[in-house]
Amino acid sequence: MTEANVVVVPDEPLGTISPYLHGQFAEHLGKCSNEGLWVGPDSAIPNTNGLRNDVLDALRQLRVSMLRWPGGCYADLYHWRDGIGPREKRPKVLGESCGLRVVEDGGLGTHEFVWLCREIGAEPYLAGNLGSGSPQEMCEWVRYCNEALPTSIAQERAENGHPEPMNVRYWGVGNENWGCGGHYDAEGYAKEFRRFATFLRRSCDGLQLVACGFDDRWNAQLLEGLRNHLWMIDHLSIHRYYKSGSAIGFTEPEYYELMRAGEIVERDVRASSELIRFYSTDKGRKVGIAMDEWGVWHPEATASSGYQAPSTLRDAVAAAGVLNTFHKWCRDVTLANMAQIVNVLQVLIQTDGAAMWRTPTYWLFWLYRVHQGATSLRVDVAGPTVEAPPLEVPRPGPLSLIDATASEKDGAVAVTVTNRSHDQAIDVRLSFVHKTVGEPLGCEVLSGRPNGVNSADAPDSIRAIQGIATLESPKSIRLSAPACSVQTVIVPVA
Ligand code: AHR
Image 1 (cartoon, helix red, strand yellow):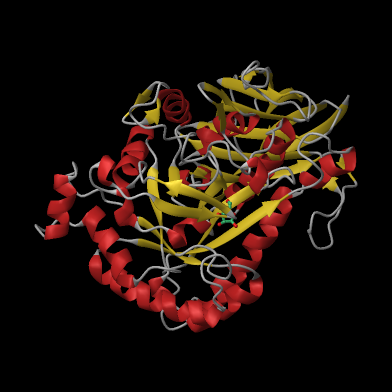
Image 2: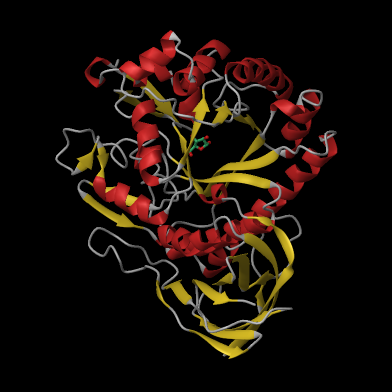
């Protein structure tokens, strides 16, 4: 069997892995927010306060750390007042995102969304409307959610069932304003951002504001336009979608091309981070990178399919590389939201009527949840490589078949090992520098056919199951990594 060495270096911490690096995104698009999350209290599908129970349970178990809503492109056409007050009185309005027009009844509005977040333990992140809204409208949304003083808007929130402030801290100041959010140029958006941020900051203390980023050129021009007001931005939003071949019928080169997802995200992070460092004059305070939309976007996921596509093990294994990049760059990346949480694009969960099943990507996040809040550690990998097509990665080298991330918390190190080989198991030695390890406390593995999926009929055909890792010496652990797999091992360290 082919072999690889993964060396964990605990005395070189890379920073704390914010739980928000494992965040998710729910848009009013296709069957994500409506039908996937929200069915309404009168639905025959079992629900609590209109949100489907099966999905709530699955999300609670996963410990989703953050949820962004209501868009996406939907956000810059959304007026928050359409989603508050008695539901039967909420207006029926046109909702639109990515070419899909729907009659939106506002059932899933601010109260329902915040309730959902509190129920699953997620930090709410609201994307505000800069494109077709005004600073006044967005400031009122912030005050409606957060105002503690006895103002009329706080009174209105209380009458609608939430006397206490909702304490929503994360606010996106528009979404993709270089495109669907108003077709601004970077200079024009910089001006708008300054105007919005001035009044948002005066409306409420402690907000975390996310500015809309794009490519390197836009980001440089935006930061130039805000160079004297950088203190207004907490996070710069970057979106990254990728694809190679079709969702299920991909070739082997396409399989390997998708495995470069972590590398293309790392390119984005490195470039944005260099720009931010260049413009940061206040050394104590740094703008973070918010990769608040990322994931695979298969060619099948179009308006006519409601942006739905099969969600395979290949997608999950490729996404492991992205999470590893976030862990490696956890001093720079402050939050990330995979697109999207249910039914649309790369998903945790799929539904069909009353049926619900978890995707391989759900189980990927399951294997990673142990890293939340832990200290990210340097990992060096030596092992087999493969030639893989470039996936937009400039000057790509050979692709390492083994990838890994490690973190330390409460006297234990968790190591997640990915085997990207299409068809070969790899024998892996985990070596620990300057630490002694004990018998593994746990080992779970996700593996199967690269194009394997779960479905209503076979909801658990691909899922995390118990794996085997053995103590080889006080400094090393042995495990076998099946082809196309992700595996987390937890070991005590001293
Ligand atoms: O996630 C789908 C769409 O992709 C979002 O609405 C938009 O922000 C992005 O272009």
